[in-house]
Length: 136
Image (cartoon, rainbow, N blue to C red; front, top):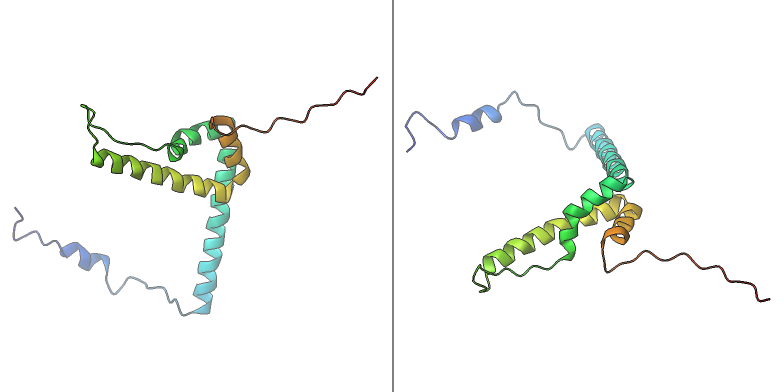
């Protein structure tokens, strides 16, 4: 039970006070600074994912996370009866893995494709062309 002394809105008053500076979104200077900050963050994000996907360990570990995006789960109870709650839970896991995989494709496409070729059994890396022997 909540006591009368505990006011749930008490902390809200402290978080939003008149002393809290508010960004002026109409200011061209603030807008340019925000755009620059977003560009820096995007470059750092791309650099991070590229570094992860350029290592064998990084691709292996990311496959452990996003490999779920390529599996379709159908939930059943311990007695074998369909369980819609488990099915929806597994669909949520698959969706989350798919969103991470799309992030990898956006920022480190070559590493993501290499990861698929290394770990997905339905996708094989193309074999190098064979040399033809000269007819004697």
